[in-house]
Image (cartoon, rainbow, N blue to C red; front, side, top):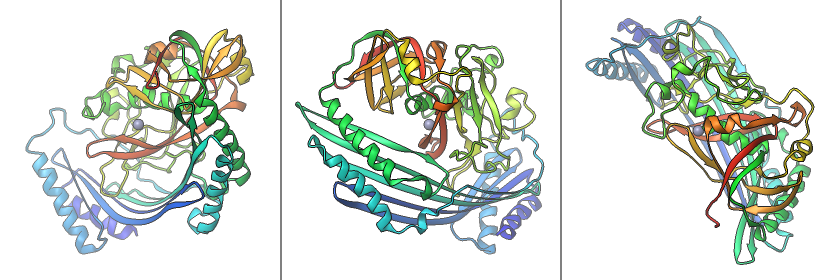
Length: 482
Ligand SMILES: [Zn+2]
């Protein structure tokens, strides 16, 4: 498989390129969807092709094709070179400074034990429909749905420096949800099996059935939930809810390409300017946020990125202080770093790599602390579970987040459910209001599989994680149900 990729690199080098790389991808996908008592759809796809990126006369060119032959390689390299030479007519003032990287030979395979593509469709249907049947037993539930989604990406990478890398990553994702109708209202409640780079072995029918019963019951409870109060309250978030807040207010905010003025078109700038490195108080002492593209079963754990840089672990925020960004080889020099953090990924063989959010998580608290103990220290507040609507500005500064289920906390205990609750804050205000997070035994990872960035848009996946966490005196407002 490497021969044609090396041919592409050789052709680019002969043409005088400063750097070139080539990737071949094989992408297999399957999605099975259930609705009430039956499957509503099942789709399978396979997609293969390659892309060649060249850095020539200080400018980039990229071209791609689904036809993987020597003759097509020559055509695609020639096109990439033409694009680079055209781009060089309007050079960037600061040029392209490409961070050095050793020419490694790497092989990476995710820890998938039961290949989901080899599991019979009947077994997948049985899992989803059995969960639907449990949800439909609740007379308030008018619709029960679910899906299983699988992806296998095999990737071969070579560059003019001599790197040869191969990865084989299978990822799995699933969710079920119930829609309850009554009391002049309808409400949805869901459960997401955390998306991981494991195979079908991560799905247990007993867990689906147990979660289905809870989801249906809580969908019914949402129908009679009272409207959330407005004002300033202490809040507690579960790990799934906080995962999205981490993603939007820390992950995107600390992508260095955004900070440097790239990706401005799609809510793409950031308030985290370079002068904040090592000094800015992003959060309280409780807040340490770690990026880790070697995280076991993490969706961004792929062995190496699409600049040919191995996966790494680093701190974005340590004890509340902002440390550094996510970078690729093109951007590391802007913050005086010699090497890339290895966080530059493309979502397809026809896409160019861009800086992407790594696996990123809030470290658990060091002292033993359970969710009940965390809630016990709240006199009147709100508990947010799961994800719902969210909004954040282009500086990644002002935001609001809802929850798929929200409970009132009264005198240290969870009380009745609330609806239409949103927490609204500014990124540093919110993270500085964090006064406790539960210990490692309550830490959970959650996958994000629909992170959009770039123009044309690319969809990336990564994992976030946290333990249940408390924030003091956060503004609560009402959303669409008010
Ligand atoms: Zn995103």
